[in-house]
Image (tube, rainbow, N blue to C red; front, top):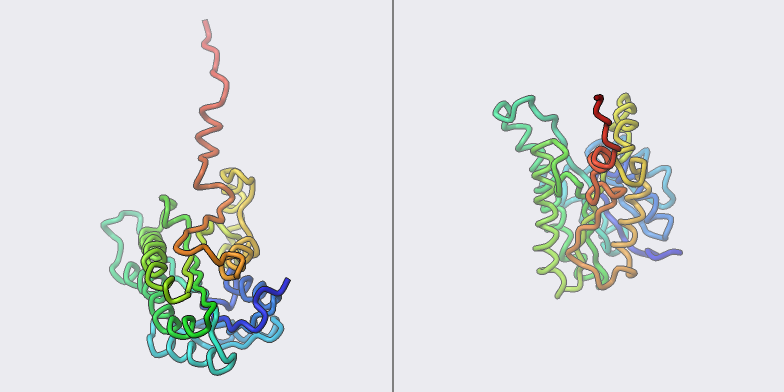
Length: 261
């Protein structure tokens, strides 16, 4: 199946993890992919391993960098048909909320939310011109429920809201805008913390944490013509974590302890 034959695609934060998996999946279906990342070496390594992909440094925190990446994609591919907003920042929480530093909050919102805004703003005229444009952003279950990380979660919730408002604006112009909200995904960011993933897995109704390819499959669907009448939605790709609290369910279902007499 080659749903993206001759599609020009730009993916941010695609040097590794979910972004790289998305790039690999769309390229396998015929897309011409621009792998962008703030780390140029990382982007280059990823692109070299993907047939027909190109790479470019792109800092979503800088408008000029974003505009240049979009212009490069259009020039190289002849059109821009799909934008995947994947770049983000996730700062650790301070032990007490009142100790949260301003710079952590500002960085997470700027790169995760405003970065996606910058990319969509630059890409939208070209997506309209393509006649089959689609934007898919990578959100998070953190934007839907409390899993920690105040600033990151607020940014992801904002990204879901932007998806809804932008979809209403873009739909009459022929561009669909959707969001994938992953649960815990086993990427390089968890290196050295694999024990955390093992502890998390039983809390997922599906019995495991996710893989980058799980998210890539959902992105490929939403970006493709198979989702041609879908816009403005948040699609959880979360192993059921938003639908069930396994730990609480099991605790409530446990047999009562007999009282000694």
